[in-house]
Length: 445
Image (cartoon, rainbow, N blue to C red; front, side, top):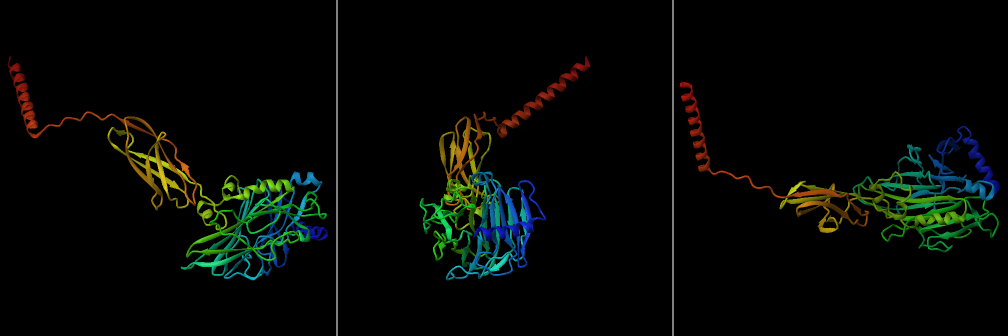
């Protein structure tokens, strides 16, 4: 976008936002962009984001998504003595089709027709849009804005209310706002050319051609589409293929939603002050596993992560162990039960006594997911643990140690037979008679 148009557009947003100034690190102010749509402004981690909501017109890239963003970190101001403003001219616009379109189109866009239905600022900011029916699915959108980095997570939620699977094409159409001076400076494959093998790219709008991007007036943009897992649904790059001079990276995902189930598509975006910072941070998007160490998945449950089709998020599991009976007598069998929480954990659990493997149990397909092993332990104190190695959807985990005492067997209490009991009873009766007789004779004296 030209600098003149950029300044005019941002002034309009600023004018509309004047009624509510930013307060503290978190602020959320509604902005009326024009009569046909609305906008919500979010500030997190030094970035200002403008969320399109309640769209009432058709557009390729201005549905539910971001219309504008700017970066106001100390680094952005120090590097060039100004803030980097005017990222995007409409990005993260979702569309849902029953069959693949010929190219990016304004049809079947998710517009959040009822406006934002919930806003959560307990950590970062999460905004959730209303439900819209597209291609027979209940579709809604959600955005999370990180408080630690200028990162946004946009997610389209597809819920199938029918009794049969529904296959759709999910489009994500974008206008980065960098116009003919769009320059790709990095990709996940290590070069500056974006192709079908890449999972993310870093680009900027050069202020002076050929330029270096360090002098750009706009934020440096990172766009993360998917991970490299072979089971993940990969995006198809629509023609014209995203390249230098083209600020429209448009993608389609082929998604099947089983009957009664939910599927999700997630894309991440980041604003940076310099190309070096952007490329250093982009490595976090190389895999779903590396994102587990960030807050970018905040608010998503293990079940929800398992529903994401374009990233293979492994659900974090916990393993707990019980031993029964405790304590146990020598020679008595002890039942070990390992319970694994996760997204339908499968596979096996290994049981240990210290470093000694006692055996392996297979997780059942139930709720909760449990594996059982029966053992006989030697006398003394034992430190038992259970180790789950994970599966295609779940991380591995190890239980806390459980102390188990095995004591020596007690000497059996002797038991008396019937005749012995009769003889004992007779003897006690005789003693009783003798005792009473002796007292009687004594009293006569």
